[in-house]
Image (cartoon, rainbow, N blue to C red; front, side, top):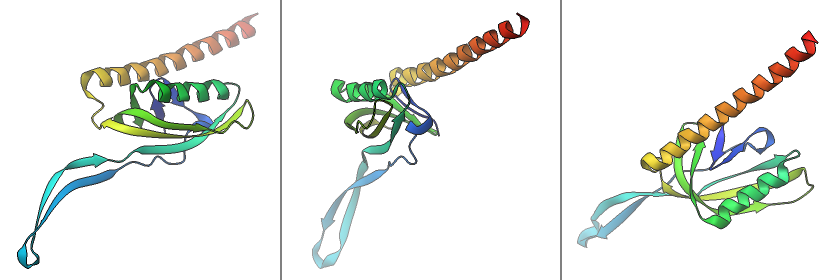
Length: 153
């Protein structure tokens, strides 16, 4: 599963086993004489989206700080997992510093929009995905260049 929160891409051990999402339908229930009811559906009320994982490796501390900076900023950021797109605010982040290379974390995001937040946020999502692909391609090109120079030297 791919998971992107703002500028953070969760990879390897940081990818959670599960992401909890969903919500309720807001209802207005009118109880009438004789036990009858009239129920008005008022709209979806999204639950917070939560997950946990482990930052592992040389950049674990940097990723934990980046995650906490998102919480501190209160900025609305895109959240992408699987085929789901949300615009969220990181309402809670917790990191357990075990070692500089091993930091379990948990995240709670409050949903602002379930449609990716319109053109601006969706543009940020597409830009984030483009950046990921371009970064992977640059890494492959560098690796191939290093390999080729070693072979032909």
